[in-house]
Image (cartoon, rainbow, N blue to C red; front, side, top):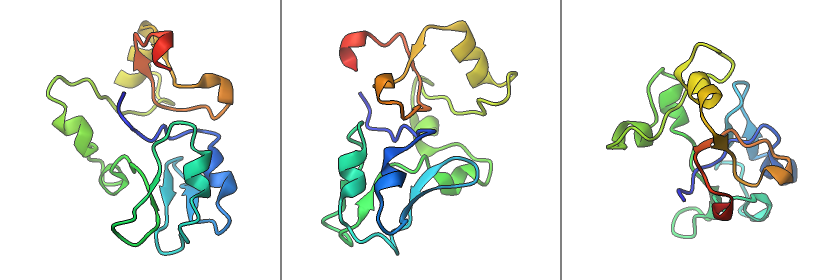
Length: 133
């Protein structure tokens, strides 16, 4: 399974950050402000998906996938979506019932990782077997 940030609606990682370095933007994307992060690792421990890590070779702060936030705010696609040779990654507005992603989720069997935790992840997998979770 890829190690994507699940961009949870109810993220544990934001709640546990003692300095507010992990935060949720107005448009719902979970980011880390590396200028404020103290590298305590609480967010790494709190992430049930194992996608956060401490960058020991850099500044010693927490890091993770940002979904190329710098690109999506400009209306561009994340690099992983562009680079996927089979078009398996799709990003879109779940609030728009006419969007491609809303249509795909509505017409297919989809699942999220560890739904029982209550983080409300916003990464959906098509045809994922229960054993993979």
